[in-house]
Length: 158
Image (cartoon, rainbow, N blue to C red; front, top):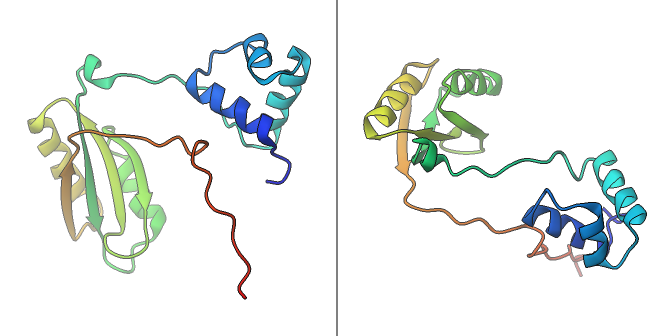
């Protein structure tokens, strides 16, 4: 990570705000030439810091306005690969987080309405060796851009 400097962080922040910015726009904002910015973006892609460019979608406008997180509990002998496979078999599942402790997985789902949510929960309950579920309905969300809040550097024990 020591290869990432302040200008790289500026470029990343600007691209997070608008991934369609041109190299020329980026160059003007960070004070470098277009070629220098292109080299930096190419390098950030090569080393895996930039993994892709995407679009943000308002799913409510597409009829998928309800989000929920469902906790899944499995027997202790269930392999993680089985947990992921059974969850991703359900098309409404957006993300699967396998976690330490109880529950075993946290599943992010997106649905049209509450009846649809019930159908998805029922399907998850029947998938594999699920011992139990708990569903939390999302009322709103907020995301921190990790680039604006740098984690503190580790300190050596004294």
